[in-house]
Length: 294
Image (cartoon, rainbow, N blue to C red):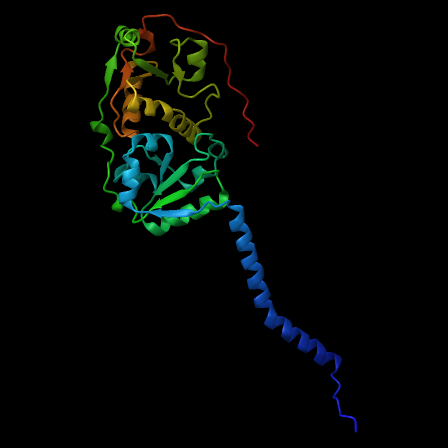
């Protein structure tokens, strides 16, 4: 006797298929999403966000060669909070928009180094870090300070009004050089004036031969380019002398650099500015490079 097998209509078959598909879709979606997550993690090449306690970060910070050679610390708080409130010396204030600047991505000194982030609290700083990791800016690791700026018990910047700089004239600078001291002459005039109108031999232009691009890029260029000099000021018998059109501008730049770098000793300004330099000047033909905005 044959068993009776009910036939399923085409409509029933379609309904059954749709039901099974609806059951399996979340599983498939989760699996696909997880696979994409794992794949994106692999593309990060081992980089990760690492929480760091304030005591450990301070220990590394106080190791000056490490601080100036391998630690790049960014304060991600809003500018008003970073300027008016508690702030760590030798920390660059930034924002997410600044990290989108193409120039920053190509800074050779930053790539392959360790980055430390300081924010208002742990969660906001970690979120910032995670966004940086996704962008893969070419850093080794990104650390974020647990507890935010309030957890920091190390050195803090003094108010700008309290930062003082001494001046040196031409004879005093030449005497130090003759005595064998390394003197870094950093001229912050615009490149057109520095190169075409003349500069002190062996001096360095603050903007570099690339010229003036303005805003964020200028600030970042100066910050990264002069880190090696600050190392020399720490470990060697060296000084830095800041130069500008006049004495007031040189003094102002000196105070900016001293405060930004933790009020380092051995920073001076040229008395009277470049016009009062008693000595030869070098000239080089220079014009503003054409910048490709694409």
